Length: 106
Image 1 (cartoon, rainbow, N blue to C red):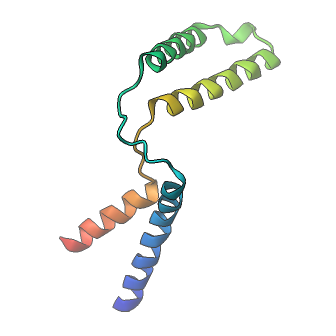
Image 2: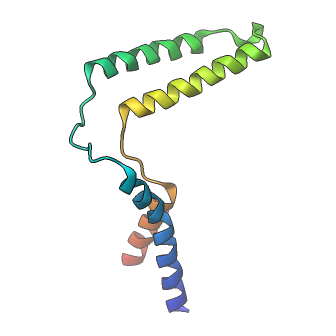
Image 3: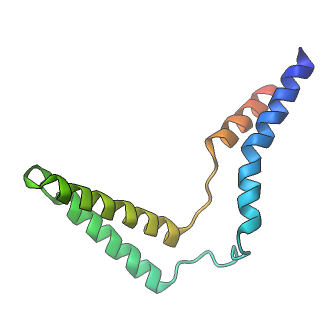
């Protein structure tokens, strides 16, 4: 039974880590540049002001098409801001595996 649980844990570990390893192979090695350029910083501030304007809008008087257009704009702004800011992300599966390993080692 113990070998089966160890095998399942290894399988879950590889399942959680494999997508991140596959993605890392396709990425360029641009991790040296961690600062955001002035142009990107200005664009991020523009995105922040636009999001603040959208939050202040009154949606009750808008039509369904206008609401959908604003929702699509917010999605595109969110994607653009994530692309500009960058960052390190850990998947939920990886966090669970790390917690399980910590619990087993203690």
